[in-house]
Amino acid sequence: MSKLISLVVPCFNEEETIPLFFKTVEEVKPSLRGYKIEYLFVNDGSKDQTLTVLRQLHAKYEQSVHYVSFSRNFGKEAALYAGLQAAKGDYVAVMDADLQDPPEQLVEMLAGIEDEGYDIVGTRRVDRKGEPVIRSFFSNMFYNVINKMSDTQFLNGVRDFRLMTRQVVDAILQMSEYNRFSKGLFSWVGFNTKYLEYSNVDRVAGETSWSFWGLFKYSLEGIINFSETPLALASYTGLFSCLGSIIAIIFIVFRKLIYGGSVNGWASLISIVLFIGGLQLFCLGIVGRYIGNIYLEVKNRPLYIIQEKK
Image (cartoon, rainbow, N blue to C red; front, side, top):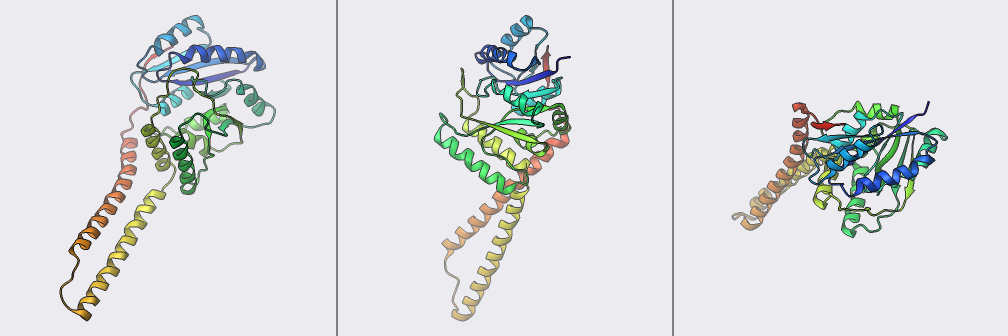
């Protein structure tokens, strides 16, 4: 009996890329040792004709093409989780529809699991050709920062594109937290992992939905979800600020006793007060982010709402 590979594909405004993606994977399918392919597209509240394209594709290939459509945009993390929950395959792959994740690598991924005994075979970009320089700079900075802060290690350039065994998928599904950062979750669960390296590939069509600000917020979520260092940083900042203030007060008192006269420097005093106030707000902001995440978790709201499923 043939084993099944489930392809989980989050989609947001991908009406142009889905037919190209499906065609490319179908061309690769004969090389997958006779494995059956199950397509699981997750429509994450697209504003274009993505859902229409998915309906047409399902109507034509009812046995192999399935989709889940959200009631609104819940984000890629929710889409990934919904896809993993719906996947029935012996092996499950996470892919993007824009063909920046080369489907032909599925052959080597399968060999890594079947022949070499790995539990996860992922992919890693070795360059960022075609990407804006500023985005590449901040991306590299993010990996440097988070690896110094977190016990969970993040390899620079790693993509969500990976093939996993059923055991790995079940382990990830056990983590149903509201605030999700899949790159960290994939790393945190452990298991025997191998990464395939490849050069950056441009989108086959359409435009990316990721803005610089969106990527910044996503990276901030990753740091908060997988590190307590910002909380420690806030505590240390407050401690050093307090010690500095004590030293300054002692200095001012001794100067008053030795030299007499009133204390000069109102402008510098106000500057110090504003500086200390800024540090306090900064620390409160860090703590507030963690409290906000706790608040969302304890509400226990669903990660997504399904409007249509086939």
